[in-house]
Image (cartoon, rainbow, N blue to C red; front, side):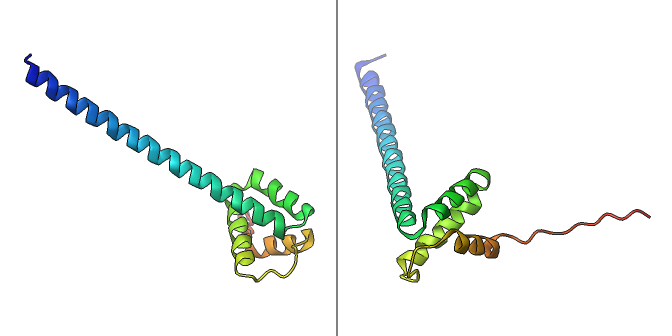
Length: 112
């Protein structure tokens, strides 16, 4: 192997390492951005939900994280648009959850 070949291999390896470092930095930035958004959402939810309602939503998040996330996003959008005039109580959150929850199907099995 000549010096030129070795030099070329080193250049390619260095470029590959730099590309990997750039990708890792981009992933880290994306994770930090997601963390900042979560923190902002939590701050807004603390401002618009009464403690009991917040506790209920956190309990729902344990069993149905996607549904709870959708409810949280909707509450944040309502708060940011100025449509919430007061803090949401537990009873109001229950009503909202009933409206947003997918309707359960009733199955009946009959024997012939």
